[in-house]
Image (cartoon, rainbow over all chains, first blue to last red; front, top):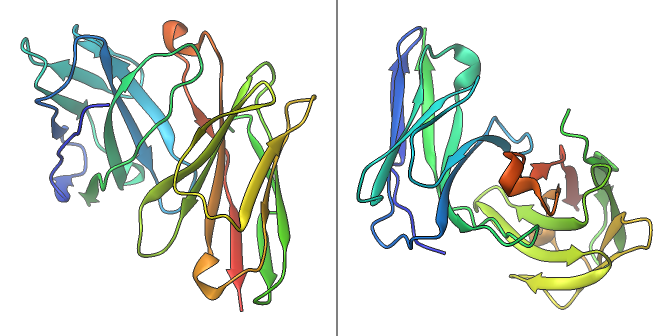
Length: 112
Length: 116
C-alpha cells in the first residue's frame, strides 16, 4: 500500500469547513484513498473513501486531485465533536482481505 | 454502534499472567482484525483472520496468539504479560463485499488492558 503523508495537527474554528490534506504521491491505480478518524481512544470510525472521483456522504467530502497524488477531506461545518485524529490510508480492495495500516494521522482540534 | 463487540472493556492483571480478549464481529463479516494501541504508539496491526484461517500477520509478539472460531468470533490470547503490553486492543471486522458497497472495516470500542 502507498505511503501517505499528513500534517501532524490542525486547528479549525467551529462552524467553519475543515480541510485536511493528504499526500499519496506513490499511489497506484487500483488503490483507494480511505479516511478514518479516532475520537479520543474510541474505535476508529470510517468516514469516506474514493478511487478517483470526488465523493460526498453525510459526514464529509473527499476531493482527489486528477493525478491522484493528493486528496483533501472536507468537513463542511465542523463541530466540537469533530475533534479527533484523522487518518488517510491508501488501500487496495481485496474482497474482505484488506488490512488497514494507520500512520500518525492529523490531530484536528475544533476551536469554539 | 459499529456492531463489533469486544469483551472485556477493561482488564487489570499482573505481570506474568495470561488474558483472553474476545471479539464478536458484525453479522455476516468473515474477516476479523486485531490492533494494538499503546499510549506512545499509534494503531499497530497485529493479525487478521478470514473465515477461520489466518490471513495476515503484523507486529504480533510470539507471546500473543489469536484464533477465529467456526461461529466467526475471535479471541486474542496474551500470555506472560509485561508492563509494556498495557494498551488498548481493538478488534475490527469487514464484509467481503464491503468495499464495493461503501461499507468497510468496522472497529469495536476496544479492550483496555492494564498490566501492573
